[in-house]
Length: 196
Image 1 (cartoon, rainbow, N blue to C red):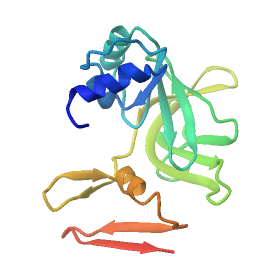
Image 2 (image 1 turned 90 degrees about the vertical axis):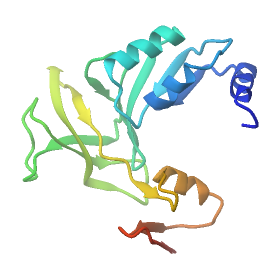
Image 3 (image 1 turned 180 degrees about the horizontal axis):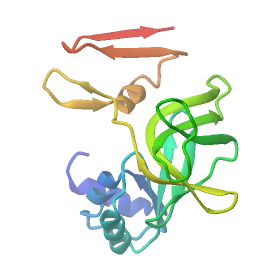
């Protein structure tokens, strides 16, 4: 933005019906003097604490949908309250496995594992997500995820010591015709970029 007030001028002009972001970015958005109210907020990528949910819903006067989503297969579960998450993906089989690859009992904590997906070039077969939760069955045939703890974000260190999220790297490469690539940073800070 050329100047800080350009943010609210742009958003007031567009008056979007839905804002998406992380709990952090939506909390920052709440600091702006907006002239309109969205119809809903959608958040993902970070844990949403009950007090933050209450603050955002009270401030924006609209419902907030909390998504559990992965780049590998998109939306898996969601909630519009502080309780358990409803499974959304009819084409993704969700399991909770322990460290010995055994299915966890209802309410037992383990790693979220996915089979299926929407990307024909990346079929998931008992794909370990690195995220942890429990599966509960409040009603027969209606499993829900509870107490999700997401994996740590992948970041890259810059020479000035700041951090860049892996999503920023992906966006920076979006205009290049790459079918596959990897970027690895050593503990010394050196980067190795490989592509096909």
